[in-house]
Length: 281
Image 1: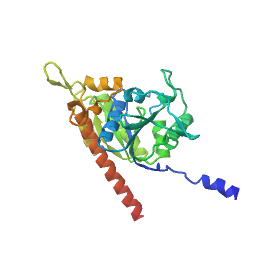
Image 2: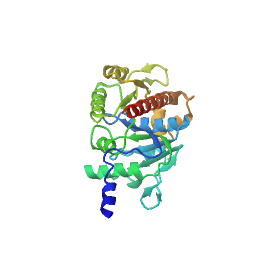
Image 3: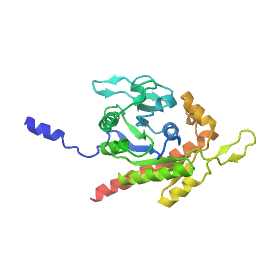
Image 4: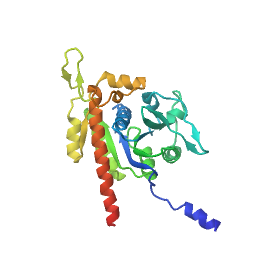
């Protein structure tokens, strides 16, 4: 009998859905420095403002900036013996390795440790009922994505790129990586698109905007929108007050809300179509 019990515990081989969590959306990028975490944080806050219940998992183990951008850095509480209580800021529940290893000490970790942390952050955090769990991935292609995909079924991924050629080359790698691990790409977001001069109000294409939309077209993917290069966005992140707190009517936040609405609609479509496939079989 004891033997059967032990065997039964081994059954879940593949990714297991998180109870109470409707959609898991990963935010990734081919390279660092494209503002991926800024996009993930502002999307999470925007979705919350649109009335969704939102969690944000900082899976960027090497440079966990989510606590700074969310304006909260205290360690999480333990609930029960092996459950972690997420922090809540700006209406979003979040967890980050940066809360457990505060300060500027870099985390040096090997694959198996990474896998363990990602699994714990998904399965041992008291997420409760969520419409969206947004996962901020480390830049590039690698171990964390594989751990994520092995642990939980992803609704889809959003790829962030700046319009520069180098960034777009790397965005293509990210798109290919998601296709290899069979994760649908919800669409591409262009970050730091145009810069509007505060003095003459002329829009300046620092990185030549439009490249991300072209790349999306080449892959037959949805272009989710372009976010301007605006100092207010960075300041909001540095102060722990994301610009989307200003609401959808705010000029600087409006684009984030447009992107958030598209992601919400697309996630629901993807989930509906995959449920139909399950019913047919």
